[in-house]
Length: 351
Image (cartoon, rainbow, N blue to C red; front, top):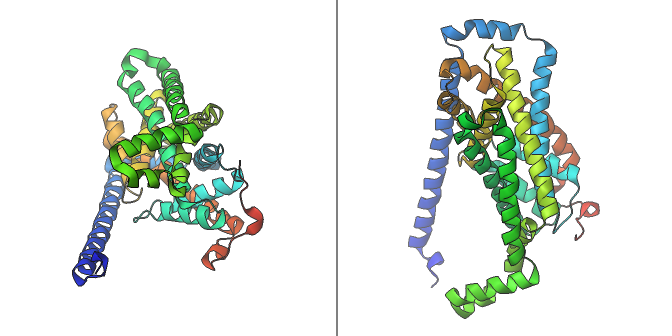
């Protein structure tokens, strides 16, 4: 009898599921606790004057915060669209709408935002699941490249001063050029054969058969995505726009509560704010806010004084994504997906 059919195997599966549920719930509660701690800092006596100035803020400044958050989410949607473009062409507005919805849901545990993104692209857009996974990996690779450039720029910021932001852009460009160079060696049919031979050398004939299968070819699409220098350039331009909008959002939020945020520091804090939320396995809520405060402290800011800035930045994004998610649900016709139907007229053609 197959092991999966035995009572002991079923018990172990239930135990693993319960352990995952417990871990996700605990992680989410930790995020809520971190968010509560940031709120407590923001409401401390030292911030009363700052909160009073916030109550007197102009509607234009508050709308600017929400607008910058919307630009950031749209830029991330364009990153997803441009990354996939070398192998499949989806409508940019559809991918941006999906990103608004999944970004809002990413505040919750259990990777709900990621699961919804996968469901939309596999069931509505007819992108194979393996290709979607390769797509997510390719997006992650470009994010690692961009965040690595920011990290290096942050480490040398005292020496580079106002040149920190240009240095980060140069490092992004250099890293992506190297990534494209390597990916081109492994892309296409010739690259797939090279990888198949390499896999067969270590895994034998069975691994060779798997490497030559349809799923392996769909996974290989991720390398093809990274091998297209023109589209990777578009991805990096969208990433620069994203970080610029987030940095400016930190500066505007600081102005609203009388905290001076330098552009260079705003760029570093905004980048860390985004990356912490992206890598958190328990949802973004609380972890981004706590991460931004922690990075600000490392840069010399007072944690009590910076907490309102972090909360304003995250709050404006939640408002933007709630609005965008509502529009996305109507635009993407998610009711069709829930009923098990797909919009045939929106089926993506091959590139």
